Length: 315
Ligand code: SER
Image 1: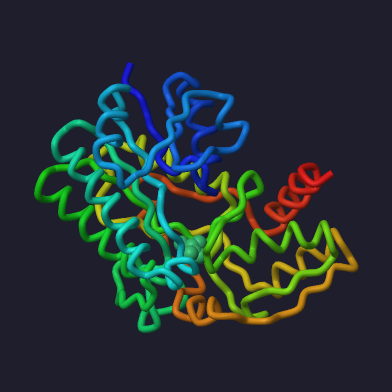
Image 2: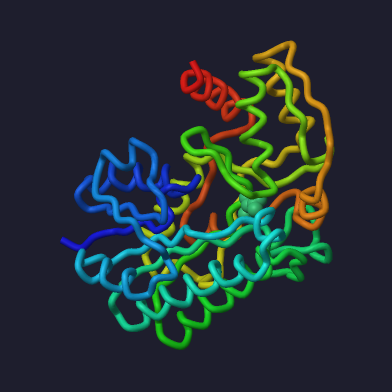
C-alpha cells in the first residue's frame, strides 16, 4: 500500500489535514512530519517523523523507505514572519518546493499538493471579486515566493508532466492549532482573547476586509482537489478559492452576539500594510467549475464553532 506524507504536520493546516487524511485513508497510511513535534492527537494517532524539509537526503530516504506516493508540502514561512526574515523565507519556501517537484519529476512521488495564497496578489490587483487570471505584483517576500512557486508548479507540469496541484488559500481560521506569523492570524487570536479576557487589540484596522475560510472547508477543498480526476484540473499553477470575507469589525460584531461585553480596539502594525495590498474577496468560479468546489461554513456558523471549541480547550 502506498502512503501519504504531510510535511509541516505541526502547523495550522497540517495538524487538521493529517487527522482528516488518517480518518479517510487509515492511520497507518498517513505519515506526519515536521521539524518539531506535532499536537498530541497527531503524535498519538500514527507515524511521526522528525524532518527538516531542507534536508534533501532525509526527505528522499523517508519518502523512499515508506513507499510514499502523495506529498502534502505545507512547511513554509508566512507573510508577517517572512518580512522579518526575507532571505530565510525565500530559501525555505522555494527550496522545499523545488526539491519536491524534482521528486515528482523523477517519479519517486506520484502526486504533490502545495499551497499558494491570496498573497500572490498585490496593490495593482483588482480588490473585489479578484479573478483567477489578473495582475499579480505581490509586494511581500511571502507573496513573491508563492507566485514564483506557482510558476514552477505549472512549469513542471507542462514540461515534465509532474502531477502537482495547488490552491490559493485565503486566511484560515481554526481551533486545533494556532496560526503563526501570518497577517490573517488576528481572526484566530481574537477568539482566545475574547474568551479569556473579553477584549482584543487588533493589529489591523476595523474595516480591513480580507478573504477568509473556516478550516474544515479548506481541508475539504484540499483533499477534493488532490482526489480530482487529473483531466478536470485545468489550472496547474494554483486555484483561486473563496468562502467568506469580513473585516475585524464585522468579526467582532459576530462575537459580541455570544459575548455581549466583548470589546475590540485597534492598533495597526506593519501587517496593516501587507493586508492593504491583498484582495477583499476572491472569484473562485474555476474551482467550482473544474472540480466542484463549494464552501459550507458562513461567518455566524464559524464563530459559533470557534467559540465553543476554544471555550472547551481553555476550560
Ligand atoms: N494566512 C497567510 C498569511 O497571513 C496568507 O496566506 O500570511
